[in-house]
Image (cartoon, rainbow, N blue to C red; front, side, top):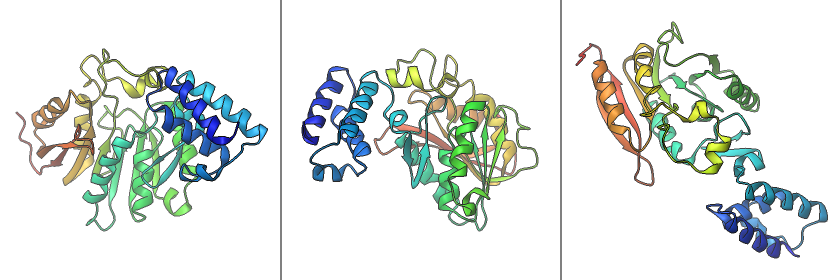
Length: 288
């Protein structure tokens, strides 16, 4: 078979296995094997036997619903290429809306200090540090395995970026997790999926549960984390918290109830779905 026939057969197999985007995944895996871009696969006529065997093995893994990013071994987030695999949450493209917000929030800050809570692979922390070379970024993660991936990705960054990122292991529900640090911006992509939610095989079988689930209502981490955010932020500092489609109002309510935040706003991603809530740290407490 030529490359086009390999792709056509792979697409049919992936579709039969229930893979959500069979043609896209078949193309991405073919491009990976051929060492080209997706746009470049039209110039690939034949695969070597080694390439064909590798492609066959990768398609079999994808048929079994292993995440595409695990098979390829990396994912693009913003302008940063991240290594990912078993034990770490795969960053989602939708979270790039939060990244864009964060970069805009620090645009006029001369030397911003940013805290990334529940950092996982380091997607937000490293992307912010890469985009703003004069920022100091603190990445907080509780679990050992994601921390290994975070350090691995940090080691792939330039010294100019890596030297301005500090990694901390700790529980974001503890207000003392980063004692002595005051931030201009806090970003958080915490575990927020309600435990009863139905999830794709790729997620439920391969993303770590600790990174996914936020208790019965999706708020078991976000709720206690608000005190940590208030402790970290300078007066006038801003926070963005990603959340489940169903919990935007709950996030707004816990921020309001804390009494140390105003300008609380629901934000949407490019698909128009409620994606994250932003708020500003006040100078006084107005607990309700």
